[in-house]
Length: 284
Image (cartoon, rainbow, N blue to C red):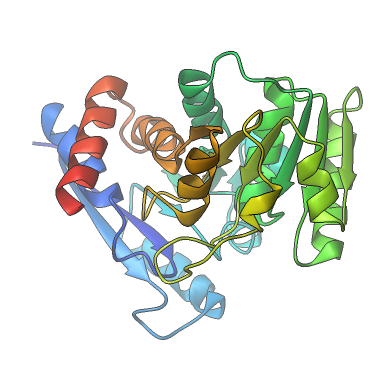
């Protein structure tokens, strides 16, 4: 039986469902896949530990591994190459061993698109507010513009980071309007949809990324956090009457793409989604 070693590097990841999703899908394909969590928080280290972890992954012959907050951009200079999509986005969340090289990919962008189209195929993409300009925000912002968003307004607690992402995406999508904003309230109130792409609301980072009074029933809300699946933002949006997309859609989408990168095999998307929802229900 073919054996593979994979994993996830990031902070506060003990509740991640990636090990169960990847290992169970591998079992259906006759593979033995071990998916190791490498939690920076549990080890009491920060992103400065990343170079050592990448060296260890090389030595231990990992077939591939995912990276999440706060490593999606910090990992780039430590790799031997990038896919065209990862280079265009400026963020990596999947690293694959290709011979002796470690190559970075971005499965967040296609994962978000896959989930969003599945959940809200007729969503109004005329003007969208994006909260968060880090690794996840860069991926989702790219995916949203690629999907057809006409105007993307980007807000981040660090205005310079939002400005840098807006400039980067504007260069990639010259036919679209991509701007950095500092007035979040005005951006949300004028938007047809809201994408939230920060850690706020996830396990270990409770709370709301914005005042729920800014939400309107006519807008849609897309969340990237999936632990918990029902974030405070989604609960508020549903109370108000917004159409919503939970973070599980993006998570399953990127897991399907990641499985193909790590194993070379096509995952059964419906089976992985059903498994994800069953795991969430069991946890709840």
